[in-house]
Image 1 (cartoon, rainbow, N blue to C red):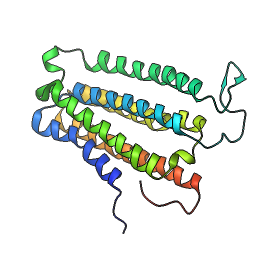
Image 2 (image 1 turned 30 degrees about the vertical axis):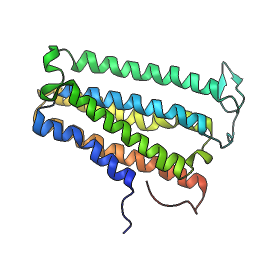
Image 3 (image 1 turned 90 degrees about the horizontal axis):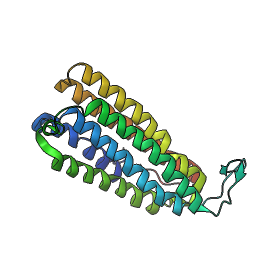
Length: 218
């Protein structure tokens, strides 16, 4: 049995930080939802660099178009600007949902016992996790050579949309029960499993694009 890649181990460990916060520091439902919203922003931020580095040619169809007009495959700047606007709008709406439906309490209760500082530390750990995956997988395993800017521009949505729906649905469920400890733990574990599966799927796709000789790992 092959050892788990460091990126997978780090992803799981970082995702369990909120579990530690809930069990030992009384993290609130809002603190968890806020942290996951920040993570979606981190995913979008890292994808800007991935689009810029992606080198594979677009395959099939007319590629990326604006108002029906094809954009040159070499024009990554337009793709990056479009992604920032489109993903930024998606992320902003997600944030509005989080603050409107889960943040309607006094400021002292928003982040539970750990406070904003603890959530910031967890967010920094998530940033490191995605950064590690970027350097180990996207650069180290040369995934940037197997994906086109058009493909990379759309890549985060398959991962983020599923997480977005799952987290919000789980958050509403936990909130309807008064956010008991068991519901918060279940939400964190569910998110961790889905995130792990999405991570493995993303890098498995990269291996398939590069051919059967690609190295194994997440």
